[in-house]
Length: 528
Picture 1 (cartoon, rainbow, N blue to C red):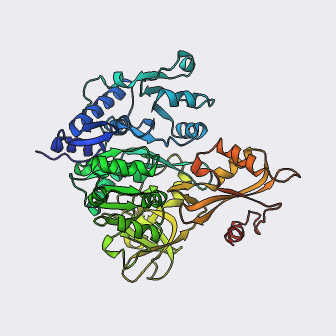
Picture 2 (cartoon, rainbow, N blue to C red; picture 1 turned 135 degrees about the horizontal axis):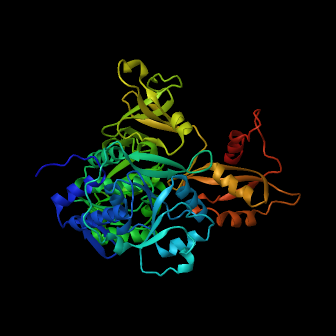
Picture 3 (cartoon, helix red, strand yellow; picture 1 turned 30 degrees about the vertical axis):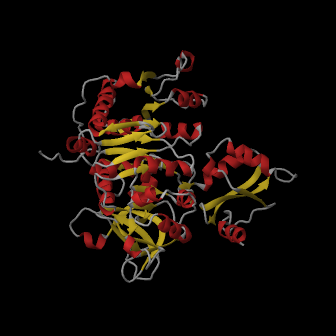
């Protein structure tokens, strides 16, 4: 069989369909789809998109829970030459509306129920030409009469001829993943087909994935590590079990039912799973467990290693702008459990001083990632792209075109053997429950309630969440701050993971010499 050159994300699935045939590719609830059937549906969706006029590079957003149709839409968009934009279903309508408008989404794939909720927010679907509806629930004509878009039934859209091969090269845009930005609004990280393909190849290499693996997909597909579960599995023809996380006991149940061999999660999830009762046979089948999105507490790691005696623990570090960056070899866990390891395959991690020169072992510097996983930049934001994506190794470039690397904003230090240790974040982003939360976005919502005069959102270290969000606020009037009312109002505007865990009232919030709120002194005060 002639091997197809992988220039489009869909080629991962196409090649797996050729080699794996009807072997299980994807399971959702009680439905399992084989690789050949999954590829057939992807081609049908791509053909349907072409039939409604999707052009090369047009954006297709998925506002769906994790299900087979979501995966078909992601890979079908790639096969049609479009750019997929997975949207976290935990976001509020106004946040979804911002994302849809920011990247000029042409096609929205969602359910009737979610479309109804989204339509309640004025202008949420402005600019969208087509909406593809998944599910059986009806939607009234009144809701779409003046919406400006055409609706399509999922099944009807797939009833087209097999799609032609996409006209793309591997450096074309494939996806836009939105992550919180330090300036308040989410920022869209643009990934190429090459980024995603190399990411799947690299991660599956160090996790030693094979077609015998069954991977439980717990993380959202809008999260780079969640999407990686698909690319990693399809790269080797493994089986993916989709799960919309509700309770930790459901994870145990699905692992038992489907003989799961691999799970990737974030610290809060692992803390919950460590407290579950795992059947001995289920625990023994787990081949590896991987952590990302923050440091796993050592106590939790110790419990998990006892729970899963045959499983290899992988501690990883990554940023959306480079998909994955480092992992710690399981053989090094006992020697350096606090390390984030070394570069993943086909990547180089540098520790640089502010002037761009390399740090010596033991010297703190900024983590910089170079290689084919470096993203294309931030969608429609040249200024922020220029700040984070900059040339490296200029003195060694010589005749070559300068290469762009991504500067993480994170401070790390390397030991004499090259193992990296995380020190801290240069920006003020809050890392909670595996999510990056912009303090400005939380503060803007607090101001919008009219209950506060000043507000500062901070991340305070928390053993379960990584960081918990604390809102420092002063009342808008002369009366004491209505803390309960403030939190209730914020809950109506933000997803639960962005809602402050507590409010700290101050009559006057201190400022630094530049007139900005003194976040350093506030954080020290909260910590004490």
